[in-house]
Image (cartoon, rainbow, N blue to C red; front, side):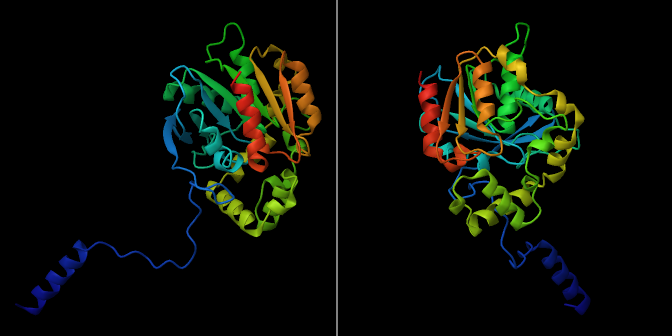
Length: 315
């Protein structure tokens, strides 16, 4: 065999061999199957909505054929496994639960558009259509509560074509009223984070119990934030002038649904006064305050949050 032929065969063999993996010189990114406390969650599903990929958790099974699905919407600058992670397995024991990464958040696509509340409302409606969900209860935390309330108000209109929820759950919902300067004036600056220090400040602002904000939790949250790559989305939403005209306000009086308003008693991000405003506006609404909880009871006090939700949905 000639020297040239040997080299040719060696080159061909090298091309056919699988590539060797690169050496791991740093930690792999946090996968979307854990909450920020490190508790395991299942893999997310993905579906195309208006041509965009929407990621969501689909957990549990309906206890009966006529039991509604519980659909969960997370808050501003967050994602499903951050806001609802500890609560999801408990909620899924008794029903089917779907928790979306809303458009522009988490593992969902982030098109360059001028995000506003109506954007999220329309993506929710199309998500329900694409996934074939017709009977559902709708819950939202913070901005997700604003979206849920806006959706419920529109679905309650007589001529509405939106699928109407069977029940509404507002968890520390933003958006009942807004200052003239807009939504950004109501949110702490450090919720849009770029350092671990800002993550710690942000978590401490939404938690009642500061001992929950450990270095490991802060690191996990920073990784999820960097992986989500959603800084432009949150900045676009908070600075969009159209959002100023999307406060729920008096529109809440048109919500014709059984409604639970569940709120952290120590919430300093969206004060408890707004919980009372929602409760007074929505006829028959039930208000539950969760003691020793800040802005996200489903994250900080998951047992008490699930107890309130289950008590509401079981009636």
